[in-house]
Image (cartoon, rainbow, N blue to C red):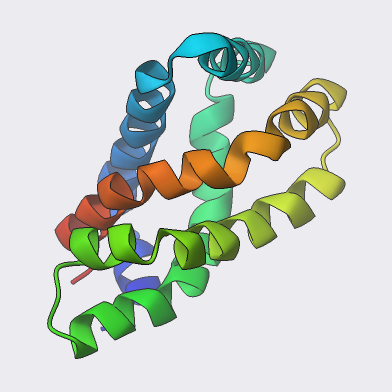
Length: 145
């Protein structure tokens, strides 16, 4: 079963989306310093747009993210490595794959608040996504098969 099939399985989708939202919340919570304050403020603004905005965004992006991560996950399996370990050691590749999708999505965003928050945070996004790679790998391990 491909990662796309596993992560878009309608029976498992509510739990996968919930776990993704929890991963995002945990990553934001862990941010510190001045940049962490900016991330927390931006995330709070996006969450304040309307209830369920983040959940809806995850549901919307999940198929594209799964497709982008599938080759990386396949490489992990081919090398017989846990996804969390492989994603951590290939964090640059994981970040580039995901940010290509969010960059395109942000360009098409209808919400000025969401687009503005994304643009303000984009400069540090790659570093932040790279830091999330091990957690993301654990999520993939849990739901990938």
